[in-house]
Length: 287
Image (tube, rainbow, N blue to C red):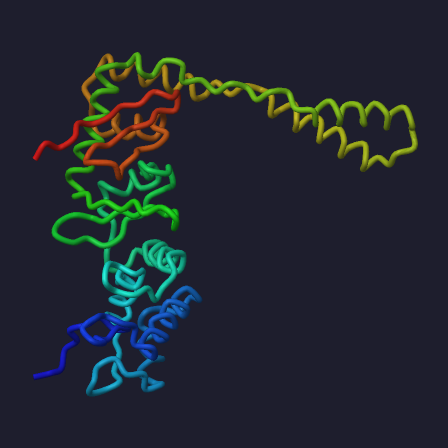
């Protein structure tokens, strides 16, 4: 029978307690370093095999699944009785990189539209989707100083988001006052206008300099023009939710236009933050 590991790579038992196996722990850190430097899992496995780095007791033969297990092993962060081997920022950076490549754990199509909106209910930082186990995806705060992590089945998360969107559709007054206020007049505008007047009065400045000043003043003034596009979109959505049933397309329009963020990580509820400061919360599970 082939030898199998009972303790994760990087650790050994020492007087009944788990301890770092120095050589393997260095290899773990090297795997993370190589991956973050742009090497693929397959290439890392090839290098480890070529250099005779032992993984199994009987032969130094690596494959990309071994590398993947190392990159995904949260025990290296100092989980429970396991000593820390990897820094939080390196572990999170590796998960983000792996997620961006969409390898091994592709995000379901129904979750993809939510990923840019999901934020930590503790600190407000964006959440990233990690591994899937026992039918539930694991979401982790991207802030390495925040411990927030939660397991959320995809179907349950989508259901709670739908619940919040239904509340918005049934209560269109929640969408009131979704306006973009014009930014306050900046001192840069007055400073540039004063410089432009002074440059005209001096009459010694180059044509290129005068053109640059004129364009700079125009650009700063353009920033002060209020954009009513959002108000028109929201008004249109209010009319739609009043006149028709909540279709998947209409849900997506609401999500894209009026939802600022979707908080998860506190209990089993979802808190949907709207762009006008209003919020809608799904019900907690009572199971």
